[in-house]
Length: 274
Image (cartoon, rainbow, N blue to C red; front, side, top):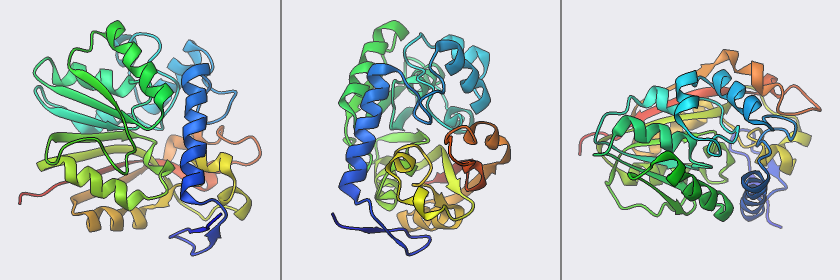
């Protein structure tokens, strides 16, 4: 097994990129088929618990009621649609679409003239999301199987890229942002909810596969994310931590309070005029 290097600490981790991708795919396949939560097996295991957690993340009761059961899997660490300011007729791409919850909300915003594309690397999750289309009347929505580091989306073809607590799971975040930049049209925007690292994780957590697949160990610092976005070409980059996210993040790990190391944040950027 080859080692990868943590860009924040320069410490070698024991989890190589392919092992990480495989572990993430397996975990989310289980979530798609068994409806367990991404961040702690005891969390968000019922519709009521998933709805309550969605409200903690910033979704309104109207948002939750607008989407049929089966799409909200209790995933995420924020509400990217709330900061995307979507307009009718826009094309939206969701990185790591899961069961399609954010896609269906985006479809309501962009309307029948708009288009929403959800990409996920887990076949079971894509199958589940496609099964939710009929229940939600999603004529303007499609779900594609693919990795967010290699998007099955044409150049300059979308107006907005959203994502919800997924990019931290990637072992190659700079490539994710390069791909997001590639598919955005001129003036297109990035509107992401994700976790950011606020303090170095203990070595045991940094090298733990459950922490890597559970939205913890893969978090990058704000400074590192700014650098990645700028290197990809984004301008007007704004990253804002959500200090109250400790309310739900501290529940993600039974053995330690991970809110001491990561917080939820909004991440925004724009592709400039060429």
